[in-house]
Image 1 (cartoon, rainbow, N blue to C red):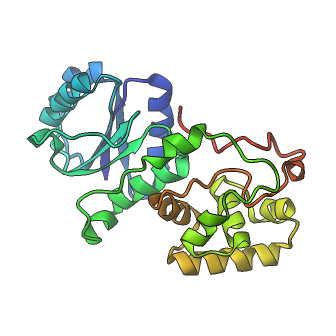
Image 2 (image 1 turned 135 degrees about the vertical axis):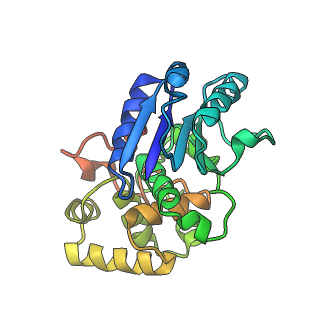
Length: 248
């Protein structure tokens, strides 16, 4: 699959380029600034997916997207925006629209969404587009609860998980290894694996990224600390209340 990435913010463009290049099924990625669209307009070649970063000014963004779509007739379009949901103009430039995600979305959400689009799973599922994630921006700015807080117990209940399964989901979604999760929760590695397998089975997913993606589809924050895990348990593992780095 060939991908064209259009993003005006240089650091975000580099981060997205690396993310795209690491997704199975994507063979080539062209990452450009919107100002470079005219220079590539006649480049030709087949493009299967366009990832377009919407600037702060939506009117300018739709103009840029129109220019890009005239150069590449990609059958799939994913829009990244600073604000979601994003009203879409009913024109040909949004043909093949598969969804809109916030630029502040965690890496696992972006990676999973792009993988689903690249693999065609979103189309086989019969969905016209991927769900939006309006809860993420608010969750990213929300203050973290104190140690021992039960604030996120309802989220475990909403997913139909036990609190410990939810704890494991949160920590795995942040990139922690099974061994580290066991240390943070003060449980053995086999016990972590047992909770993880039960959680995957209940959510009907095959791994941590898909599990986090499915949880966030339901507005789950996956915020820290999970289920009242004490920040002191993180000594030597970074800042207790830090969240998984987003792309910006």
